[in-house]
Image 1 (cartoon, rainbow, N blue to C red):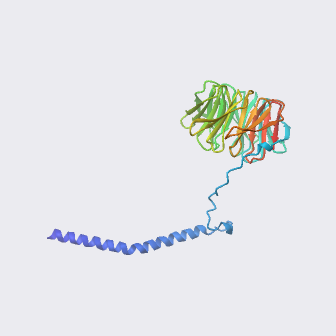
Image 2 (cartoon, helix red, strand yellow):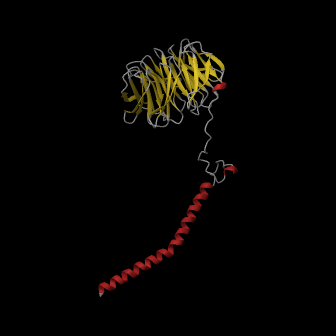
Length: 369
């Protein structure tokens, strides 16, 4: 009987507690609501000294970017030669555009690199520390440094603020064709005639990994935008995709019948354009690991390729002295830009779609708009 009384007492206590909790719940909910409203109102109130958002932004999260319209294809059909600049004493082998300003860097067989203001072509800065030809230049994502790759087997990092070379990377055993900064700016990948790609930690100036797998010269390295992957093009006629975290080759794309001279990603990073010494340009679907399009720009070698901002036009720097532009969907020739007096070694679209710049063995770089 005593046990039964204890159970009844326990049940009564539990029921009383449940009733008390149910009675308190509405009050607790209203208190929580008032706290959240107070927080929201304090978040909406501008801090002292901070400009308040314009009235038109009321009720809208101004931190979230609006859906932008997709960029329009660059009208290369209307492009004509607008300016010619005699940039170097020898062939201009490569070019790079500054990520934030209208500035062009050029690399040359005269063992120097130079930086130019566009569209006026005024010389801003030059670097002459290499002992052999300079084959590649690349800007740091912040625009504060430049990497140069050379036939003297080194990569040099140049600091614009200090106006000097602050780092020389020396572990390649043959000529270095190009070097590319990762989007974070913490790492640099370089490709070489020694059949390898090296990943450099720029905080320690040490080589983190050597990527081996190609059986001939690695002519180009290009990072897939905002990922840890990069693509390489080689004289062994293949295009390969690599993961910087594992050091392993993730995919190899077969289809070229001659040396792959250059490759690049489109802005979205889902298509690769590659070109070879027969003048063949191929577009590859990165996700499907498949060839999308093949365009014959031969018989002269195709030296460089570049996508426009919309990814709908591909420009090809040809050994016949022309820049050929074709549609990335159907391969239709849109324009053939003539003006250089020797092989075109490099070509780039302006990110804003206003012009195209090319460089050549005729010692010049030219603007088309």
